[in-house]
Image (cartoon, rainbow, N blue to C red; front, top):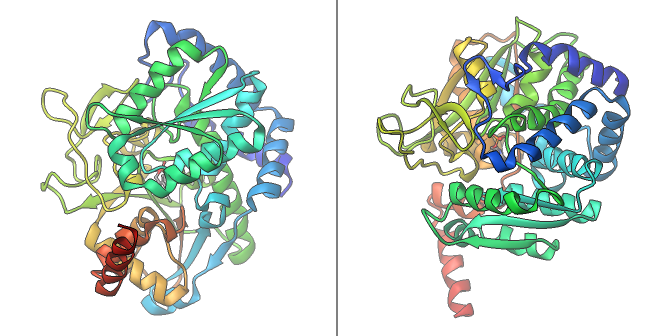
Amino acid sequence: MSTRENSLHYADSASEYFASAEGYYGEFGGSFIPEILVPAFEEIKEHFEAIRYDERFWQQYCSFLSNYSGRPTPLTYADRLTEHFGRAQIYIKREDLNHTGAHKLNNALGQAMLAKKMGKTRVIAETGAGQHGVATATAAAKLGLSATIYMGREDMERQYSNVFWMKRLGAEVIGVDYGSKTLKDAINEALRDWVSSFESTHYVLGTASGAHPFPAIVAFFQSIVGIEAKEQIQQAMGRLPDRVYACVGGGSNALGIFQGFFADEGVKLYGVEAGGQGARTGNHAARIAYGEGTPGIAQGYKTIFLQNKDGQMNDTFSLAAGLDYVGVSPILADLAQKGRVQFSAATDEEVIQALEIVMTNEGLIPALESAHAFAGAFKDIEGSTKSDLIIINMSGRGDKDIFNIAEGLKDDEWKAFINRKYNQLT
Ligand SMILES: *Cc1c(COP(=O)(O)O)cnc(C)c1O
């Protein structure tokens, strides 16, 4: 498919889900920002509106991704998984094959290009597990921008290898030492930087959440996933899928693939959240599926948050760091309310089981986040028939998760290996 058709296709299929002028999707979204940042947001809105329908920009973006990050990513027929269940034809969209190992680079590169268009020389970003920080540092190095990444001190301890790579890629990493020392504190610190630096600096938000127009910008750059998947499944099977599954943290990989099918009402869309230790345990990040989240306004936008009655945010929990987030994209909150996207949750235990099935049957190692999409699809497969056609979005690869996967699989040999290494070092 030509890039011209790509961009037209995007505009056509997603336009009914564009935000209102004030940045709302149904009752969710909006922009609740400090007065001082209004000019920064106005500038971004203006430039985003200009590139959104600019065919040349989209072409540059696509060719950059294809030359640098290996796009288009394949749509792999999972013949052994299909045989394993004997219930549905299963295809896997391979976002794990992007440079840096996940869909995140699609957005980081796109926003770095946007930053250059706006004449900025520096980017900043928040990062939780460090994946978005690595993607942003990578994009900044490639495009010659300087980068500062904010990360909670607690998260830096847990994900030190990502801190190491961000620094080697030339980014400055600033640890945040207050609050819970995690993602939400990193967001606050990045915003504090931006208030005094926006003339030279673009804030690269990592997922389809936050104040308008960030959900729209991130969804726009991730739409490439769905555009490709639709074209590929039609080529392979001569028809559209019955169901599409994606995991949902902030919502960017899910919106990426879902956008390819918004206009096709026969295609059912499923978002799978982090069920952690299960409903009503307090240890999960299922904002929608467990019905425990409620509408609220925080972090610059309105969505469904896991919070107490006083609006205090709850602590969330998941084996998958990338899904461990209290809010969710306002676009997905709206699509859930309208019934266009169905939500379910997979527990850590179900995720580990799914991971083992995928590894041994397909030779693929999904990220713990992506394994939620597989687990969600596998739970539904009982009710399927052989002629059903499903696509699972494999948002990233699992090499990064070796510690947590070994823990989840209770692998004693691995533990012994780590202990020996640790003793050698100390
Ligand atoms: C960050 C991440 C996610 C979650 O983020 P979304 O914005 O919900 O896509 C999912 N999968 C992988 C591999 C990630 O790195």
